Image (cartoon, rainbow, N blue to C red):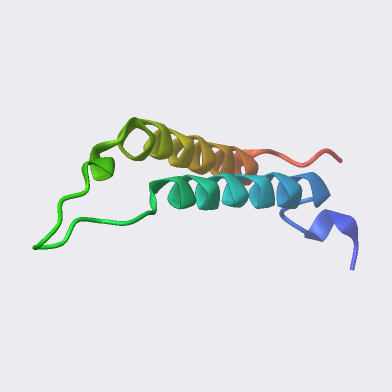
Length: 74
């Protein structure tokens, strides 16, 4: 098989992996303990969970879209 038969090159796969790692990091930032019926945890409304983590996930998804749309060099 020639290299020209592939839709992606090595850099596309690297960018996809980095984008996926950023998305996973965003979901890790969103995780944590929650409130129950008997106890209230105000940390569920922290800035990290509500503002930072969704933006990190969005940046990861945007970078993955760029990796897919990027045209490999010949």
